[in-house]
Amino acid sequence: MENENSSLPAAESKRNPAASYLSGLGSASSRTTLGHCLNQIAKTLGQDGYESADWSKLKRCHWQKVQNELKLRGCCGATINLYLNAFKAVAREAWSIDQLPQTAYLKIRSIKSTQYERLPKGRSLSVTECRLLLEACADGSNQGARDKAIFAVMMGCGLRRAEIVQLQMQHWDCLSRSFQFVGKGNKERQVFLPKSFDKCIDDWLIVRGLQSGVFFPRMRPGASPNKFLFHHMLPSSIYKILSKRADFAGLGKIRPHDLRRTFATRMLEGGADVFLLQQAMGHSSAATTARYDYRSNDMRKKKCRSLLF
Image (cartoon, rainbow, N blue to C red):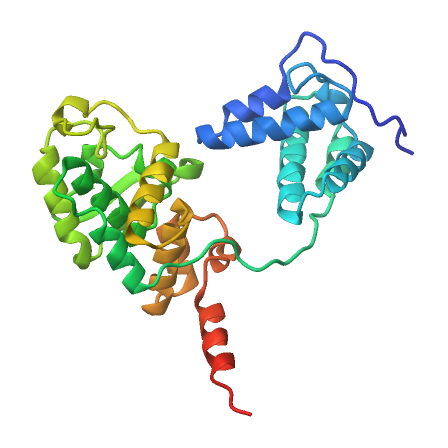
């Protein structure tokens, strides 16, 4: 029977499985998010943080304490499962470096995820809303040309904002009208620009130039983009730019991930199957991709609103 003590001892001077797991993640945002989860798990189990905890003493009963704490905080099923994934990942890492006994690891690995189903978050933009958003960038400035091209790539190729800011000129293939890059999860993929957005990119490249460097650089108002070709924007900058342009267009609140949802919806409306969309979006699971399908909600609304009694 497992030890009922739900606290976790402090780590001795040895390799830390949590730090090792985090260092192996390909995305900086993932390291930040999961590092926060592991810190909270360690604190729930009586430690100052993941670096000071002795993960070699991890047991299945520890998860029950963490889960109870998350429920008390009102966390949703998705958040609880995120913490569970971090919990399991550290257990796997501790086992792989011979710090955690196999029996303890197998018990932790068998913990089932929280079952839940919620309506999809965010929204998918209509064709008219997409046009208005792009028109809001047509102010004759260099930044306007850049912002319009950014939105075109996000809506037309489904890139995440963290992927947008990492794009380099070398990732662009003018002949195939595509970007080839390594995105989230260390996955390399090639995405193709819709023909309707060709002019957005061409107009931006006329302003930017064809020199090597960041494809969408950080810029100061009125300055030439050539001065900033090695200055990356922050992902948070995409949020601010989109909020500003959407407000000007009178579209209300739009989040960067809504443009990715818009891409998925247009692809499915165009007849693409979910597995083709999965590759285009860089998802590991088709189940994740299916959550980006906003067609059913729109169709259901249209049918229900047209019923006659």
